Image (cartoon, rainbow over all chains, first blue to last red):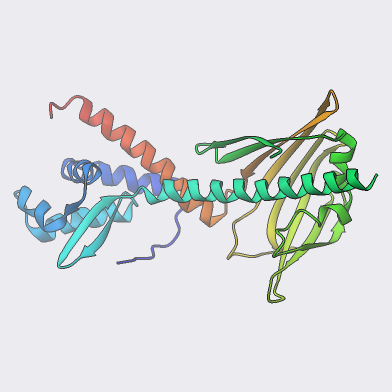
Length: 117
Length: 164
């Protein structure tokens, strides 16, 4: 499931994240999700609260960008968001490979000019 | 290969690439200063670049387009921040026509080029950075990453006092 939330500035994101973390149950959910894949129904069995209540907590964490949900069969699986870091890494890799290409072409031009002398 | 080092800093979102050439600093500088040489290497072979404007003076601008395999044109620009031939060049570069950023492409990035010659070998290093704080892509990537790091640090602190 993909939900497009409006873009938030860094401060608003931080506000949401701190608000999301200001609850013991949500911190616990986040810690468990960080340790491994976790289904929301399994999570609901662990807490003395209703499934909708767990879903509400998950929605708050999701809104803060701290977790995301993926459907696997009938289960909703929760995990933390390493994608943000992965995307940054991919962007830098792309940049590095662009520059490696450019430097290779510069070398080629310099070598060609030398050959012509 | 002339590339001697690639350094990536995920926190600062910078990438530094260093290369050595068997040429003088002036010759390496020409690669940047002469638009006819520049367009031979700026774009990849499948997207050759054409510079329509190239003004290497502080505050100056360069404009170019890259032509794709099917003839499609991708416009890009540079804004020149600092120029010290043949040793230093600082630019901001981005995609889109003048004043009309292409939102489908990555936002503006900055590049600091340093060229030094020693013993007939010229070392060129390029520190490349994503500069556009307003750029949504960067914000999504790094705002989240930053927030995540802070959040996890806070969780660690919160959990530290709790016997698990």
